[in-house]
Each structure stands twice: as C-alpha cells, then as structure tokens.
Image (cartoon, rainbow, N blue to C red; front, side, top):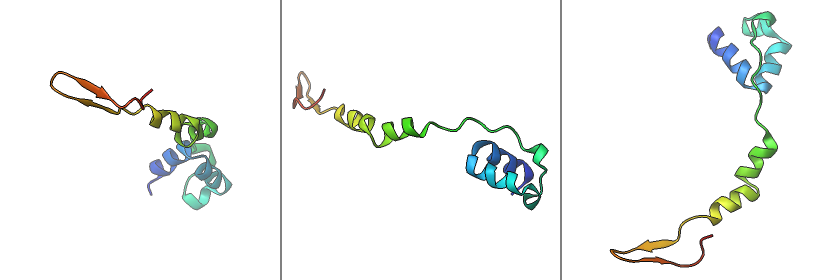
Length: 79
C-alpha cells in the first residue's frame, strides 16, 4: 500500500487507525501525519435499518399489484 492509501484508510476505519497509531513506524508513517478520523457510523441505527424493525417495515411496503390495460388489481397485502 502507498502512504496515501494507508492514511486514507486510517481516516475512515477506526480499527485500522487504532492499529496504525499503536506502531506507525511499522507502516512507514509518522503519528503526526495520520489525519483526523471521520465520524464512525452509528451502529445501532445501522442495525435497525438492516436487521431490525426498519428492515421489516421496508419489506412490508413492497408492491403487490398487477396492472392491466385499464385496471389495477391489488391483493390487499400492501400497506
């Protein structure tokens, strides 16, 4: 990896940043050159939308209608 790639990774990945700051010389960079970290995602919110109630609500809103030339027929399972 190039130095710029290592530094970009350290800014975006908290786990990698922790490893890098523990021994920056192993990566060929100085601790002073490591940029400020970006805010990490809110894992509770992410979990809600990918596996929790939010994911179930998203699935429940799928369309279940059939369209004809002049009519629309729905099975009633949509919200």
